[in-house]
Length: 330
Image (cartoon, rainbow, N blue to C red; front, side, top):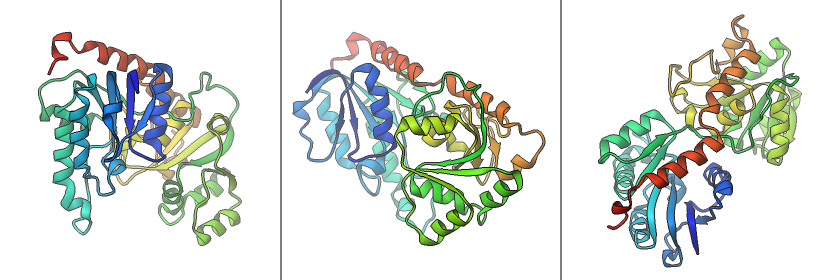
């Protein structure tokens, strides 16, 4: 396969594939799954863009084979770019394997970086780590965009809905947060909970959703997800505040002018996001008089606009062009 830009991704479905597909469409970039058995001699073109997520390429996050594959790609492509969706496990328990493998994960991320001509990261903290690991390279720090579309006009009518969107595991975290806090606040505030995503394989929780009169919309095409978000006031996601910039769920809420309700152990200013300005810091914040969902939703959309899909397409084109010709020969 020969193309001006080829996106290399981990096998399977998920947010990384969705991201690469959305980004690749305006660039005419085919998406290719990369595994230990992939014959990279069939690939070639102007640029290979690796979407790196260690756990996507290897179940323990240590795909040593990936570095060797990328080195082989240097003979097939003029440029190598890397989108660092993840670097390595952080804040992990010493009882888990990730704690003991974090050093190896860092080594793989560092070795891949040394093979890159340019890179992108979704978090400022990630970018700072990357900048310490190698000589200066062309790069951009851009939070992830929405994989379910972007709303041009966010000023349409809204309903008192609290959307819970994402994978079964992500939605389960929302429902279990502080022993079902979402149900208590939804009842107090007169909010209707709308559940978007594949069914959650938990009979106890499923029965609770039914008892709480949650609207179970199931897994929907992205156009229908977008329509629900366009009509909702709130959207909840359980994610660390310092990692919110890499959450596709958070991005979907922001891109649709929904007021994100971020459930995190700690809140602070990260990647330009301010609690109770760009998102509501927990369900308790919804009870405060200073949280107006339309105001927060507008602020979230304004923050999102600086890294929307078209911005990232332009950034990728600029980064590809920024590698001087004399650096292409290795």
